[in-house]
Image (cartoon, rainbow, N blue to C red; front, side):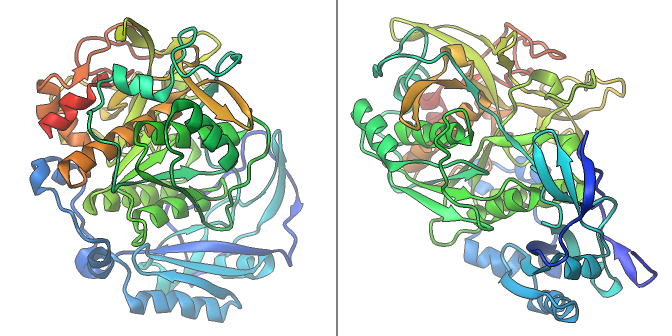
Length: 526
């Protein structure tokens, strides 16, 4: 459907999901929404990237006010207006315009979207359900070719999966370690989180792409821990809602794990849960909404969802990584689960794959360990790899080059035949084995959950406490882990275990990064 007056959006090509079958065209009169992402203002396109930020000492890293960021690095009014003109010419409605997020949300029928973007949307069936999809690239008029960087939402296939693993169901709730399972405050004590801080004055953002939370469960859980119920705000993005399914095996488990872990280790922090549909558009819009939220102003973002790099379009990876870069510039730390399926990341092609967004060089990637304790102290901590029960993600990115701050610490090359020298994942780790996992409450039931998705909110709670103590956000923490902090003995080095293609060893490795974090040492050295 393209012609000489149209340009393909770079990196927008799609193929059907593996095993998916085209049933027919998507209903022509179905109303859908898309998010059009445009470039930054000319003077602010070149933000400092991971390499440049990593070369700066912590006190010198930029902390740009969100409002100032929108003016200096957002989209221009003229270029946003060109997208609005495009909408008018193609019978599309302008739903929302955000200069800070560089996003214009358009709505219209499938027929109108097909004509506007030069696609043919179809209805697809696959093993887990149905989705609206497309093949090939998205097209835009020539006068928008240099302005538009991505178009999201035409295809609504599931983009990511939650990185949690269920443990063996326990009986009555006991607020202490039970059979090797821990409550979040116990883990905070074992990892020596800084005392005298509770996250006061901080806001933790949590991204969720399904499921929901129930206040009654939160009150019961925190009451049994002897903690106040955290202040949790549900923020709707792209029509996403707090919709608990009632099934503790569903995404409800992810949502409750995230809230309960973060809330238990930083009980005075405010928690904002950004609910969005599980699509590339929903995921991206949830992140940019959190990063540029001028009302709640979260200082930490916890992301427990992801997918192998090969499952993303290039335009989505680019837009998502730019959002993570923007977070670094405004002083927000993004924590991402590294995955629960070892070095292959459930791709099944006998190659090594890293999970995205954990592989972005602008985030702190969180790996997983198996933790055992005795007498109130860690007695053993090894790489999480339980046959049939999951293993920590980790490895070397096929997309992102090796950041300078990882160049001198002996990170491995890719285990794949090309031996690519790329961004290595994870950066740090904590308990993730469901057999030594986190005792949580979901849909009225209490049982252990593990997975690297537990590590992201655990570290989010830690950083809320650290930010409170410092009186400022630590911001882009990741490069600092590879310099002074590693040398200062902030980490408990994990030297035993493997995630498949990569082995643990002294110092940095692509299973658990530098290891688990001693929270008090981290705070002291920052």
